[in-house]
Image (tube, rainbow, N blue to C red; front, side, top):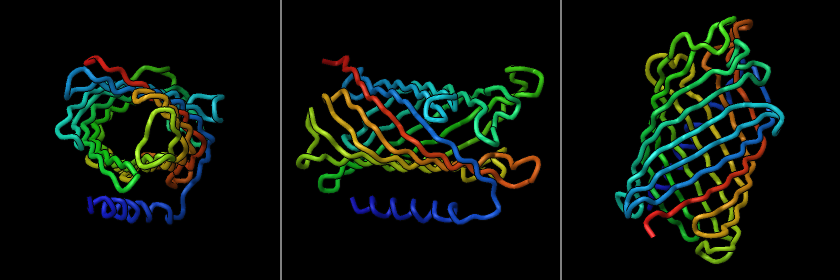
Amino acid sequence: MNYTFLLIAFFILLTRPVFSQEGRLKDNNSLGWYVYEGDHQVSKRWELHTEYQWRRVKFIKNWQQSLARIGAAYQVLPEIKVGGGYTSFITFPYGDFPTADTGEPYPERRLHEDLQIKDTIRNIFLQHRFRLEQRWIGQLQENTGKTVTRWEYQNRIRYQVAAIIPLKGTTLENQEWYLNFFDELFIGFGKNVGQNIFNQNRISGGTGYQFTDNFQLELNYLYQITQHAAPDPNSGKPVFEYNQGFRLGIAYNLDFVK
């Protein structure tokens, strides 16, 4: 499809100004993300999605975030899926400018809607994912522990382009290695977003091994840039995280149709 290159070019142009901004506070963290994902076939067109991400800083030493997600998707066409789901998310205090500024982890609840489009260019298998999120972010106060005093609502839209490149031939078979890559942009919009219109960008690439059609293991380099929703209270400057590390992912799917 010709629109693939247009989407990627637009994505690069959109993220480019983010990296040229000045007058910010920088926070660098070493990440270790340990990820499980599963897409389980429950009928010819329907599948159930399960996911857990154990996100650590200093590679594995301390908590960064915890993410648990469940969802469903419907195969509209061989190249198109639509779906949605629910996410339970917890952010822990980490870094020089923690967003969990009361010293306690804070929760977030999300709903999301997805559109996924697959494409192929020679031996490159592409997937475009457009995700709309409704976020309820728990607000804590000092000296109240983990008690949520109110929930702040925000909207966010995400676009991810991902690629898989087989290392043997033009198709990916069992017991074969492959290269993989993804880039995802997060944009906040609507009430309560403030200066956090650009929320974050993630770039990841590495290698994977397909044991079977339903079982893959991947090890990737991960780079994440994140803008905090609120400026630093002492200097008034925006805070950006520049985090890098690795992402270890396991995909294990079940087929309840066979």
